[in-house]
Length: 123
Image 1 (spheres, rainbow, N blue to C red):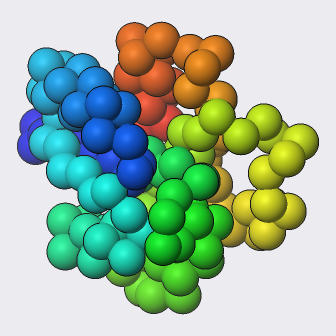
Image 2 (cartoon, rainbow, N blue to C red; image 1 turned 180 degrees about the vertical axis):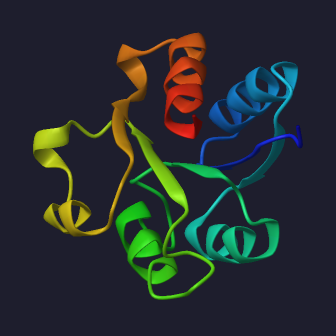
């Protein structure tokens, strides 16, 4: 079986590194981007099976990025797990219309729990 591809889009380097390491150790092909503009290009070029997407980032927030990739054939069906420290109640309302696969508050989950969620979503 070909390795599943995970794209991590988060402006915090320690977070990107932590999840990159965790997913690589578990056999995933991993790429990351540190802002929304690079994230859009990475979704198009890398063709991930799932995107772990932070909401609060400089240049372009995650909801704006997601709205943009959903406009394209290459981005309309990719699975997206929102991985943020923004509580669901404070999340942008537009997310309800952007076909997200899940919503996780980083502070409430271990990297292993995130890996488990991703594995369930990719089955």
